[in-house]
Image (cartoon, rainbow, N blue to C red; front, side, top):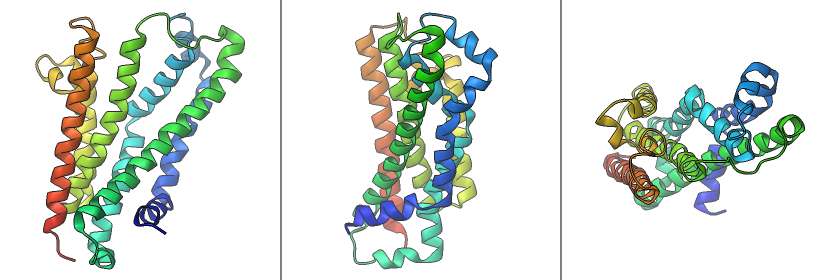
Length: 245
């Protein structure tokens, strides 16, 4: 068994991961909220499969609870293993490799969660939305900005992972998770704040979509996402290299 498969298996078996995956069932609950669904689907521009999927992923992002679970999972992978001395088992492995494998395992968990949500949303869409509103693959307008917004939602979760990882190596679980949640809350409200909005990737496909060409929106939002992920990763590596085990 490779190091990645061993670490990923250990991460995936955690109770918090099962709780996180339970949130992927959220699209199954929404059909029961008929008023909410009817309001959303009444517009031909929002009753497409892609728009429904985007709305489900956005709702999970805004709920905070899935982000809280992600933060707890990340902290348990780093802080709990540091505190318990489990990392002593990795003493003969290069530290940068340990960090890389742990982060890749966490990214894989998030990818599974996002994929599970997408599959549940797909089933919900065909069984509930299509019979009432018909099938539309893409929205009638704003396809590019919607796709970019989907990317920035995923990007913000990856930023959350590396940020929490960097903090959990040096700080307690409470501090690391709280910082991650505060980042998410700030990222949600930043598009509405003049000046600060330009620092957050999700501002560009939402509040700034009409102020510049799509190509520039894409470059800036992806650039900021990669920059923050890179800074968080470098910080995590630096902090991990300083610990003793």
